[in-house]
Length: 263
Image (cartoon, rainbow, N blue to C red; front, side):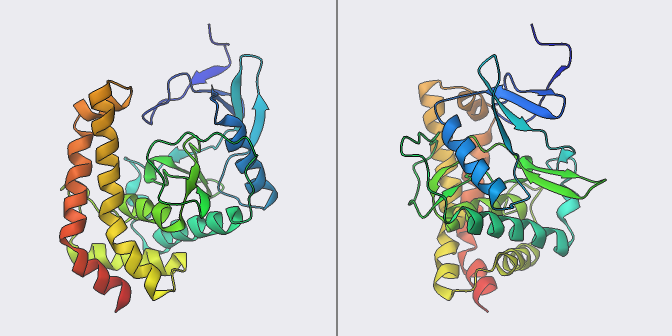
């Protein structure tokens, strides 16, 4: 039975057993937890402000993290990121994370919770930088990225392309889809605020805008085929179709994205 002062936390796709206890979050640990805690410890020592701090393992074997007050911006508060200055702030927080993690040396026995095969090992990436993992607290103006359990080897551009998909957003769904010129302008703003200054990197980002979405489609398809949860349920709910549509939407506009990033 959960303790009286524990409150189940809802939201997300894999939050079974996640609770708030006072100013902490308790969640089931996994083989990847020691490596993730080492990463978060490194970010804390580096002064990175937008990540929870690990506080060890409790008596029930659950990982303990500082609680990030506020609410995720997805879906009800997504309009919070409409202003250019706030979208730019997200991009800068991602760049600060990538810079802070650049000199992180994982433990020699690090085991990462790899869901999609990484495109390299330039850094330890978050792999789920998205509006559903950005908590904003209005009173203190604190912004925190949560759910670091799928962090692992990857590249800056792979992490950035996923963030662009969610925050710009680059979506075929009429409920979220931006007019093409607005989406292109927000993509340019995001890349500029991140500090993606190298032309070669900007060109390399463009195909990732659909390849990363297609990777999510393939991952959910595999989860459906194997019956692995919660991915099989997400597939049944239509998330695979959504990622497939987003990949097609982004690829069809490759020339538009290229012009936006380079002109």
